[in-house]
Length: 364
Image (cartoon, rainbow, N blue to C red; front, side, top):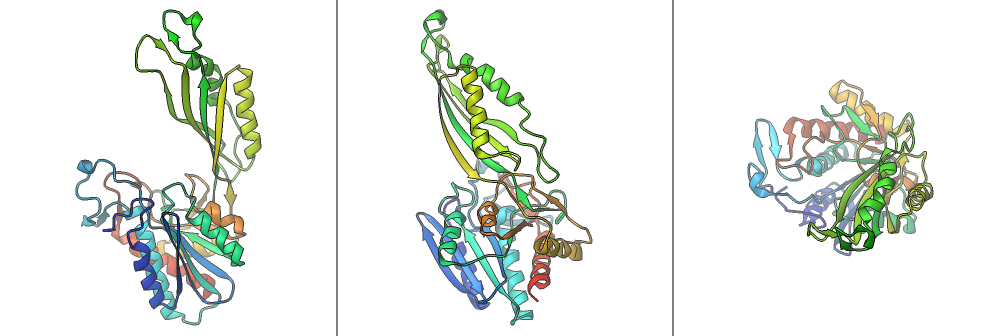
């Protein structure tokens, strides 16, 4: 946590982890793609392949003056560890590594293989990180059967929730074209804000679907909106808007794009539109991995976790298409990306025991 690995920087975090894993008998491979550091490490040469996945990069700190201390000088107060990356997700990485070391000592001849797939591009564009490594692994004919992602999945208490999938994410960058003019002569101009307003109202009010038993409904949200010259007497000539659709498997990418553009055209909006796909929906049905994770959580906490597909995206969206079962289990997410990000010390220790139990359930 002392290493200021603000995305896409890794600042040597993966090197530290690789050294620990090498000591536990792992073959480690550093894969630098563009400005992104990636680590692929394996122990064992047979299947099934169990993989821990995570990221060493963190988001920027925001206003440092608002923190109770230096964001990259971790400190413990009242049983809590404070610092950027405490929850998202360096505590998870520590728990993964130490659980694996303990498991290998206890079961040096474990069945199957253990792998680590780590990146410094999860908090960034996510182009040269896990997505690129997965493509390389597929080209090599390497596989992942079970993947446990260490993202902070818990909501109120450690282990109350595990993620078994995520909605897809489709973003649009919309430019509405108008004609700039004097605000007192609207007949000589074309206001793009007025042009878009009816279409935007329909997009926001639209019920895209009602979701499924496993997925929340599809939602449409505007993230950025700008128009105008700054002068109070000028009708803007252009409007720019960014929006996002988080969509469940009832939708398709092409269907969503077509619906948005049909609404814009019906309201006679003059526009240009660029689309960006962050990831498609994925879901791991109840099976070997989800049972192993749920059993591990229950053995440590005494509670059976709830399965969820809520929240944002994760790098699991790149691993699931390999045919892998993917489950996310990590610490409480309440403080992630916030000032004074923190995690309970006791939760890190408990998470380590959960990860150890997962390995034992699957590979012992």
